[in-house]
Length: 449
Image 1 (tube, rainbow, N blue to C red):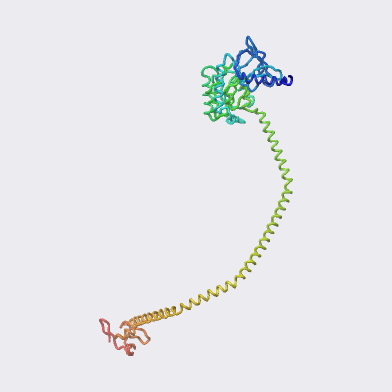
Image 2: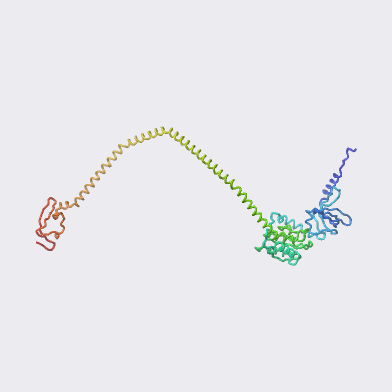
């Protein structure tokens, strides 16, 4: 009989009970009043949820309670979404709370969750789209109420940390009807300027209704569309709005936003001084190290040069040996080919001589014919030139019946005026010559005796 019993340990029993609860009931909405709320150092919340008839232990872990948009406290009636479970170590039945809203403000919480899910699905909360804050902004734009404590805190912290920082206030109403569109337009206006490096948008603490302008979709999209980095600073550290998720950086308070926006000027100057000193020291040490390395580097460089020259000389010698060897091989090969080349050249020469001999009779005949033709042509030209020469020669003129008269010293007489009585003249005919003495002379009109 005992062999058929199933005996469980306490831990096994509690585990089965937990699984049964979680699977049978699962996740549910429960409404009740908070009692015995404890905020643990780990950030988790532990409390009892009760009504007139019963109570249940609840646990809400840090990653979930950070999203609660109001300040829970004992006696507050709330509506929670949780998973039924059992704390196995004590066997205590409990509710693991994932979401909490004020029972009187459930509609706002529902709107918040719906818009949050929508914008998250669009990627507006993604870390890779967050813009980094400038290290040292020139001018900071502040979108907040001009009369609230938040603007005073922001200005005080900014001017204390960096006295000469420029601040441009874009005054808006931060709660009530029309406040959300004004906040969105102020952010858009600051983006039209070229001198703003970072924007702080926020307000002081308040109820969920007071902070609701920063949960509006228009404000969220204005922040997401901003080309200038935006720091959200809405309420206190426990307050979370849609603007916090969309902003590039979330600050828990307006004062904290100012601290994130600018460094402390004096600390920055001290840091620059320290870095300058460190840089000088590093440069000095580096110079000393390099100076100590110079002799070794010079020696290594000389060694490298010598080694390089030796290697190059060796390569030159090897190349010269290869060239000599290749030249000898080439000469040997040419010598081996020489008989064949000689035989080929002799054969080619003999063939050329035979071909020339075959052409010789024809060439001789052609040359003889051309020579005879040239001689005949030259003879004809000579005869023609002789005839022309005879026609132009004075002897030819004489043969046609003319004569040529000269003085005794051989000067040709062209005019009767050139002779005088008693002059001895020599007259040449085609055949023979006559010697005469001038007895007188006649001109065209006169006659002299």
